[in-house]
Image (cartoon, rainbow, N blue to C red; front, top):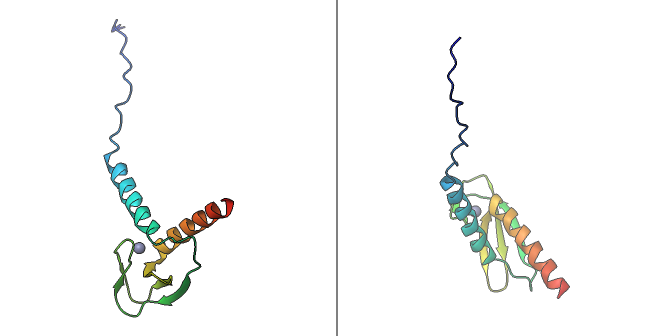
Length: 105
Ligand SMILES: [Zn+2]
């Protein structure tokens, strides 16, 4: 029977590089910051959901909205912008957050 004698040292696993997830976080942070530009708690906006007829791009993420997919035209008295479905979802969440914030004040 062979006896190695020395116990094999247990090494902790090397920490996984987080670089990729950091970049994604940065991008979504950036997008959220852009969307907050479009959030105005003091006004109820006019929202029109339509099917995109011609190629346009989302005002928040700048991604193209392909013809046939839903786009949201949102208008405040001083600001009009267009969002795709993803950014619209983010925007409504931000709007809700800012309106509940202002109600407690
Ligand atoms: Zn977008």
